[in-house]
Length: 136
Image (cartoon, rainbow, N blue to C red; front, side, top):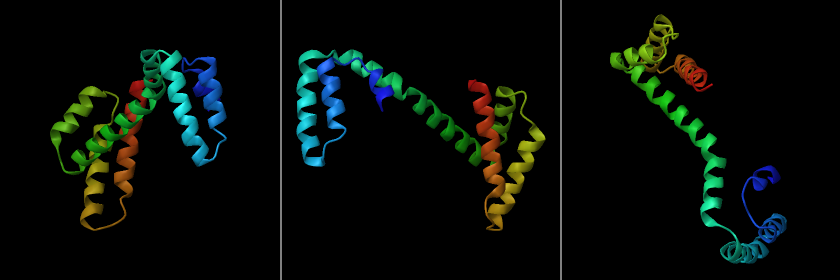
């Protein structure tokens, strides 16, 4: 998008080439990418561009990390890992231990009875909300 493109330190010629390339067909785009690469190697500072791209994608990476962390905790709680429960209570004092245990117990029963994972979803949402509250 134009807003994302503006955050990357590119020369005017490179920016124009990128904007032009956004409306090209597949074959023409391939030629345009070669031109952009040549322009970037001639004019632009690679380290600055890499840093800008890293900053651009870091919020997404943080969100993915939080999602995976919540999934791992959910799976451990459903499996009955008491160490994870204690770690969660220590890390998130506002977390409701009884609610976590109830959701984990219900999710375990649903798994055993091969029912839809309603409680597992609720447990995941609760854990994800804890992580979101922590990151704010």
